[in-house]
Length: 77
Image 1 (tube, one colour):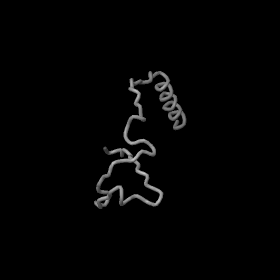
Image 2 (cartoon, helix red, strand yellow):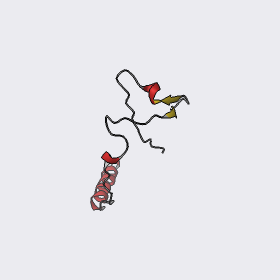
Image 3 (spheres, one colour):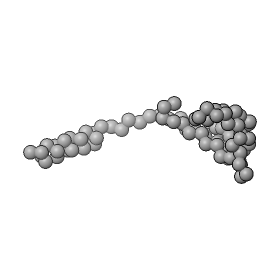
Image 4 (cartoon, one colour):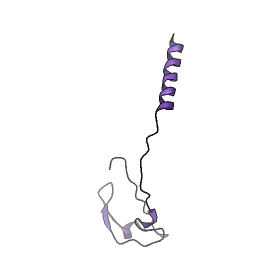
């Protein structure tokens, strides 16, 4: 009985997904090359607090070989 019920549920789900039309969204293409600083481009001086509240500047994070700044959008923005 358990196996036949599982097969029925799986079969119903498969039929549902096969018959449900895909929802499409019209999305405007974004030209990422026009957004923000580009690779190798110098960025302006800044002073921003880090996750611990310590103010960081470009000078304070710059190492011998430069610095890599990555902007990451979190899920809770």
